[in-house]
Length: 204
Image (tube, rainbow, N blue to C red; front, side, top):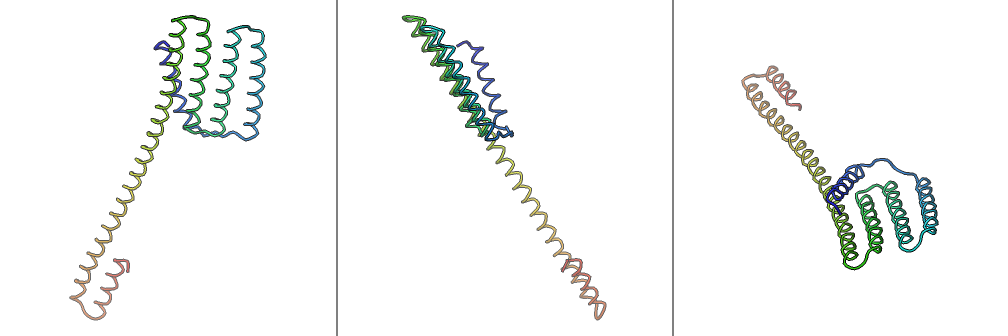
């Protein structure tokens, strides 16, 4: 597979994970069932069309029909129950579908040319699946990192707030001690009023 093709696969897989992992839309069960019915009908029609072809062209046609069906089912599942794993399965389905068709096309060749063709097809499929796995792990790690960072920030804010609360309490306690000491120089009603004010300032 050419380098440009590999880059396109990488970009498409990366986009699928960046958008897929954040997908918020949900599909109803009825829509899901309708999707399954449509996919089955499309596959049946595609297989029927293959009947007009012969030999390896028929095999290629069947492989394409099966591949489209599998990819469509994987995409339907990812839409119904969005997750990183579901979108990873879509990329795997695409890689395996493309690989199956590519290997069937190799049957039009012979000898070493066919062997090379098959190895290239398998290598392209393996690379696409490996990239999809790497993207899924990266996406998961990034999300986990963000969650931990958010937790750390939240925890830090909580600790800062608690520290400020403790500091304010210590400050009031210190001021209360000072006020009590000042009241000590008074007597009678004046002292009582002074202590009442000190306690009020302290929040007691």
